[in-house]
Image (tube, rainbow, N blue to C red; front, side):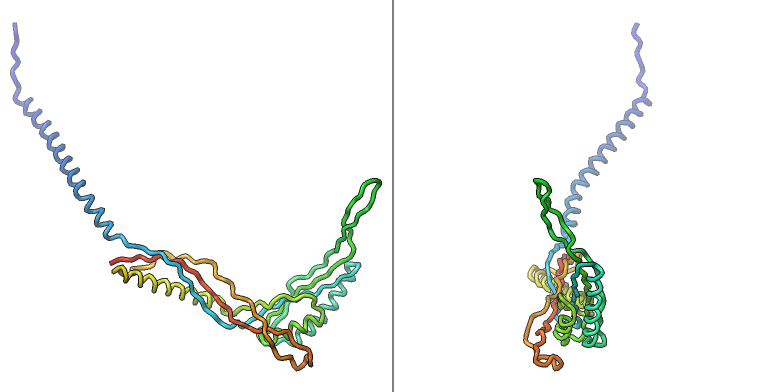
Length: 268
């Protein structure tokens, strides 16, 4: 005996609603993906269009000025068999040095001690011990040294001060080292000049390309070049030196330089 099932209309309606909703969601998902694929290239193209063109340039600024300060280093060196004797001799020579140099210094000039030391002097000695030769270092004396720094604002007196020091106890001289009291400001001027030159070049390149300089995006500085030293020249002998010639020193110009690497953003 076969039993026939009656189809339930409510059950079929529920299936239709389920698959219909599923189909609708799928259709919406497909449409959304299609929209994304269509709009994404447009967004990327707009982003590329709005992106700035950049140019990186290297530039150098330079400021030249006469120095207004000179530094000299003088060393008084004495040697003796004993440390105490070397120190006493050095003290006497140092006093002579200071007294003489201070007489020729200007009101704004100054002298100060940088270093003082007393050290033993060694000599390599070879001795025979049995069948062997032994080499040893033995103390043969002592050396005392007193290092002074003299700062001069009266640059015309450099030769006079150097000669006076060497005639009154100083054994060694180094310098002169020229500088300027407004060194930091001069260095800034050189840096600003370098930036101005870089911007002028960037504007010229931008104009040739039909675009404009928009802004600076990055600045990198390099180590500045130290000012140059001095050059020698003839000078008239000092009145108090009679016929003896003064050490000739001619003060040149100091060159302060700044090097920059600047990145500019360019846009229409």
